[in-house]
Amino acid sequence: MIKHFLNLEWKQYFRSSYWQKSIVINILMVFFALYFVGMFLFLGAFLFKIVSKLVPDQDPFTVVNSYIFFWIIGDLLMRFFLQKLPVMSVKPLLIQPIKRSTIVNFVLGKSALSFFNFLPIFAIIPFSISLISNGYETSMVLTWMFTMILLVLIINFLNFIIEAFSAEKELSFLPIIIVAGALYGLDYFNFLPLKSIIGDGLMSIANNPLLIVIPIAVLVLLYGYNYKILRAKLFLDSSLKSKVTEVRAADLSWTKRFGDIAPFMQLDLKLIWRNKRTKSMAMLLIIGLLYGLFFYPQPMYRDKEFMFAFIGIFSTGFFLINFGQFIPAWDSGYYKMLMSQNIKYEQYLRSKFILMVMSVVILFVLGIPYVYFGWKILIVHFAAAIYNIGVNSHVILFGGSFNRKKIDLDKKAAFNYQGTGAVQWLIGIPLMAFPMGLFALINWLVGFEVAVATLIILGVIGIVFHKKLMKLITQRYLDSKYKMIDAFSQDN
Image (cartoon, rainbow, N blue to C red; front, side, top):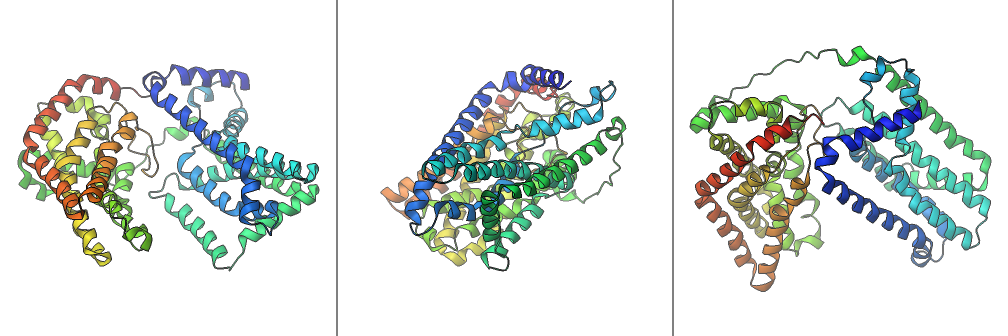
């Protein structure tokens, strides 16, 4: 039966429209995977020598074990945001004479073959070889290596438990960040030396192989708990239960002052407020607003004026970037119906433009307190806001005409790459890299004032030619209209 499941998974993947239409992205992901494999191999092979030079008076093996705590926190955070439980289309299987236990065990077993589980092994094995070559007992090193592999699997199944409890909550990433921050704080302020506890524990297991039953028992318990959770949800009628939600009305009469685009603005605002992905994306605005606090309080960044442009573009354009890059995919669920109406496409796009411009203005005003760190920062943020309005708003609208991926609005926004294609990766170059590079180059060659003026002039030029640019962008959308309708009709 497992062999049959593997065959179905293989056919589902290579016959899907995603594989056929996004082969370039798949190739790019392979290159990224090979890059990380190479980095981990290099780290594992030379970690012993690096630690020996950095801490010559301590045992490198003990030092590495003492820092496993930080790797656990980092790995758990990375998995929470990037790794999802590998699922299969179980609905057709539930009406077949197949045991639910077989399906659940296959899904959980498949998760053990995740790339996130193999990646640490590329560092663990070379480091173990270097330990043996430097005189450590082979039995001790092999016990430690097997313990680390068990630890990787423990993190794997622990992540799925956390995902299961936070899947239906908005901003579900906050609890895991708070817990990880609290654990780090307990160790940093010596309230609970977790770094030493985990390091000593790994050394104890390596020196006494009988203690390896402890991580094995933990792994079995986590596997059993995941099994229990998935089996409880594996019913055909569980997906048929309708959710009753209360519709919250809001006064959007103020949008009428925008004339014929008011109905589209109202639809966009309702879409943002009533759907999980858009609503949580809007709530993430606070991250964009406070982004500068990660850099400006640190003295090392105050003299790096080129960073001001990057932070200003990102901070004032956070909504523009996150909302604009998925235009018109936000409406993919009813795009076919929308295009069958007697509406002007330019009005539809202009409503999106006005929302993005309003967000830039609001975020700039709320970010005025950054002047506390220096007047130059406020001036650059103002120039970045003008640039976002005049240039980036048009760039991101034009990039949206290449969107071909449907978006599920019921999924959370944080680190959700569903609906993301090559456009979303490539558009970051003109949005972020170009203004930052241009500002840095002019600031270096001429001066700060000229660099600021350049961003403002480019933004003003975009504002002046807004109508002509919108006509060109609208024509691009009209040319791609039927391709979008066909793409958004694809469920896979």
